[in-house]
Amino acid sequence: CATSAANGSGLCERCNYVKEAPGWDVRTDIDDGNTHTAYVTTPAGACYRSTAPPLPGTPPAAA
Image (cartoon, rainbow, N blue to C red):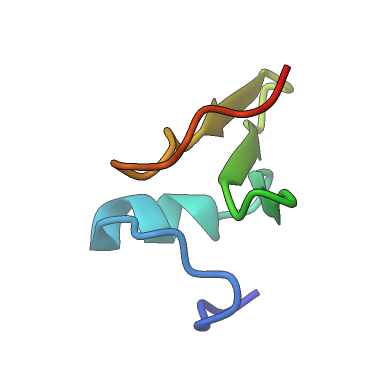
């Protein structure tokens, strides 16, 4: 799928091409706190998750 404002994740050009290569799957979800998490599956089937840290000055989440 082509890169757009809706699916962009701030990757460098090289990483963006890798993300779009056959066998790779990259999803981005945004939670209720407006934090995004990227889920990456490699052609070998390895899965990775990366969550952005809170923005500076964000109050701690209620427990």
